[in-house]
Length: 102
Image 1 (cartoon, rainbow, N blue to C red):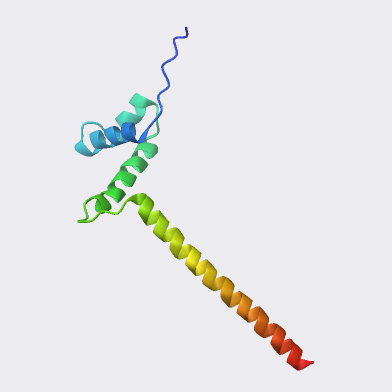
Image 2 (cartoon, rainbow, N blue to C red):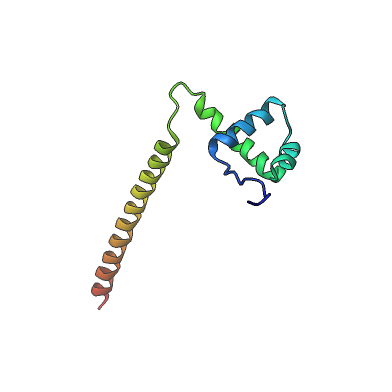
């Protein structure tokens, strides 16, 4: 057996607990970074991410993050489809105009 410390994964649950402690003032990003061998900027990014998601969580009808991304993807697919139709139309128009020039 080695004397190396046990490697623990930083799951969302563990990150959330640490972020709560930072927000509540129980620890600072610097202190936590030293304790857990992380960088202060990494912990600060987790805090920023948590604070950014707070607005959605506090809405009357919060949307699931997956639902938000799926809507964005659907919107992008629709925009892509429309752009492809426009390109196809313009190519046909260009071919038609080239035929009339001959």
